[in-house]
Image (cartoon, rainbow, N blue to C red):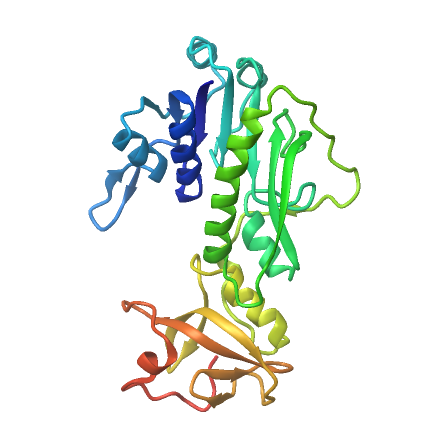
Length: 297
């Protein structure tokens, strides 16, 4: 099939690679390069960089709403567009252009967690399971009917980074199978159970040790690696990136042993932490030459 691929971040790259092996990609659409690093030099997005390595033509318009953008898209005469974490709203002219329309790979069990941050929100909410849905796109936000769906359990110590990689691999495998079975009828999403995965705000990252340990643990895992849940230790901001629950009790913020910290109820054992300007470290390395106080804030 002739495919237009539309994606931007790391999550999208394995899907691009899978489609490149099985179909003809006539164009790759992604977000424009952005200033990054200390020198603020423009850096291509992960999809942009990988597409160039694969020798694929790349387009990165700032909008798809103009008549020229719609014509350029339609002139590709694609059979289907595959969209995964692209970052722009697709107007109706774009949705209608390919023969089989536009298919979106979404990292949740729709209609739960429509929107920008479904992986983070699933962990933050304590969901037992999540998955990937392949949806026929329409004008609404992740409202389209579903062609394929697979479910997976969320591990008790799994972070957003871990789940991100697993769901990306799942979506890559699923989309190849979905395309092989086109055309087929999609199933409308249920009207019940709709939730929205709002974009993660950095203001959500500071840990409140008066909360129950189960909530603090979800916060640490759900915000890892970005933006990274954090607390103050000896006046220094420290990111906490991995954890698991403990049965120990203490006063909120009390350091019970090493990097085991009491919460409002229960405690969490931190298994990966990062000081400012340092790399992430397990507890034994983190504590080497670092004096923990009686309480963290």
